[in-house]
Length: 190
Image 1 (cartoon, one colour):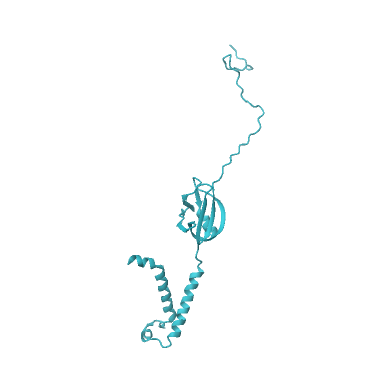
Image 2 (tube, rainbow, N blue to C red; image 1 turned 60 degrees about the vertical axis):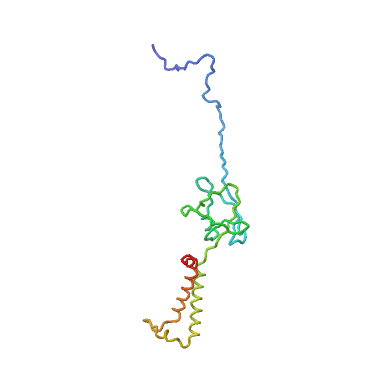
């Protein structure tokens, strides 16, 4: 039996079924599928030490579930050291965030209104200036009031000679600042 190369072999179908149409639309128009997903956002009212709001803005939520606030960006943008929750009665608890990715630990829902109070960073110039002014003022007071220094101060000699007033002033300023910073620690210990 010879098979003719021109002939094609067709599949046998039951007599009632219509022939299958390999392409239902011979001239299809390209369909563009646009998937629009709404990025979850919250509205933030930002206060500075309870005053304000200094800024009102919307920000998108991030993270795996798209429910975390990007706290690190807010801290950097507005120069804050810490963010606190805020309401009409005042400042609440600090808003904790992951140090690695900068996102909040607590989740927020889409469309929420978040009131946030910020604590500004302390500039480095301010404490240094306070320290230097304190040292200068105490040195001036000691040198003016002690025209005739007491015997114990005369007998106190270092390798440089007589104990200078500015060293005593530095010691007083450091002691006062140490007492202020450890006030809570001293109460806790006693």
